[in-house]
Image 1: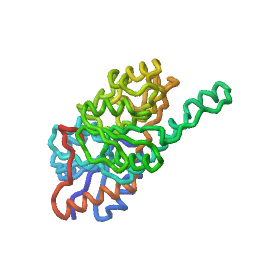
Image 2: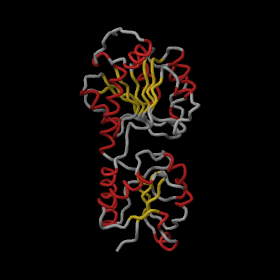
Image 3: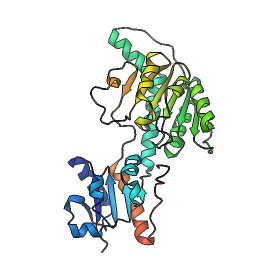
Image 4: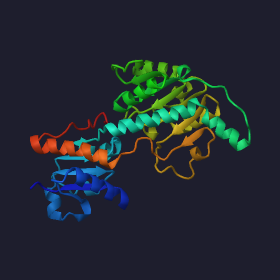
Length: 315
């Protein structure tokens, strides 16, 4: 019988119950127990922890961890809090997450392409006016990030008839029908060409503040921005200034530097901003549990830890 697996997370009772039920169903041969239900002796024997925004102080009470499995695709907080203790962190790579994120990218791209923010303003003003239609073939969508999420989004967008470009830090093979950009000059070129820019980047030392005043000023006049990556990638004050100046027409924001977004944030009330409560790429307990089960069974069979996060790069 293998040692128990610890479950640590900052989740409400219902979320925790859902994840534990899904994990137990996917791994009936394992014992998965919340941290609070482990004795001190059991904690000393724990080799694997499954985590969702865990308390670093609790992780520190598991002195013999071999590796940590995250239930989230984004791991910047884990890297910040735990990356220096040397325990490998395995992020969630879930095809269902890529599908739901691509779905969200297409949905909110349509929202902007079909001028929904303008129609909302007209409704509030009691104005009945039809705006000129822009077909997808006349709209360039620029994707920042060409990993699993970006590739899935590119496929959805090209299938819907949009002109699609994608940027990555270093040159990558791009999906069919997509124009590729890379490096600093490539980022500037992509932003200047995009009617809608979609950020899907992870938060790292290199991407923090990437979309600052200078890069926002270099965007195509009247372009829109969707941020589904991480909040600190976009400089909030610079974004508001670009919207106020008319350089940008609208911003759809699903991620923020502080979450939940504080009530006093000007983003809530800005007419050029659509605020979403971090819903673009939800983790589904059943699909996440299936991925975790595959990683754990492979480890039990071979003793090899799954591919871990590079704590220097941050993902």
